[in-house]
Image (tube, rainbow, N blue to C red):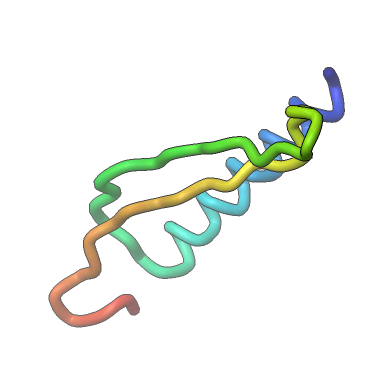
Length: 59
């Protein structure tokens, strides 16, 4: 369980860093989905971030 919490915290940091580094001002949505193996066990998480680019570009 602690490993999963650490992985989620790392994913949060990566998403937040992406938003900051690309000077994104408006996030539309953030969505997580789990990937599973053939037994149904969770083996990964995919995070999608929908955002609006600034009129003058990303930077």
